[in-house]
Image 1 (cartoon, one colour):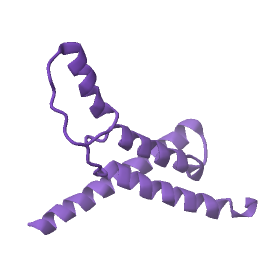
Image 2 (image 1 turned 180 degrees about the vertical axis):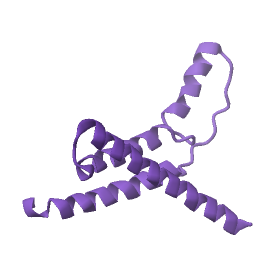
Image 3 (image 1 turned 135 degrees about the horizontal axis):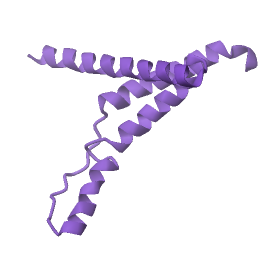
Length: 110
């Protein structure tokens, strides 16, 4: 059964990567810019989004403490343990690919 879990993880990683490509394509169409020019920023935004929404310690998960302060209801805080999400991993791969693509496309300027 463990092999099935790995397949699901690979599928989730692929879906996230495809979503990053679709977002990048949409941005290039909206702003009429080159795909490679936008890809670095899409990857960077994906990384920031993944870090802010990481359920094991991102910024959004820290909002529980402010809810506790306002309501007086104690919320047990879990020990923070960094576990990269599929969004983070796919965004890192996407950013590295974007950097390589940018270097290839603009190599004459370096």
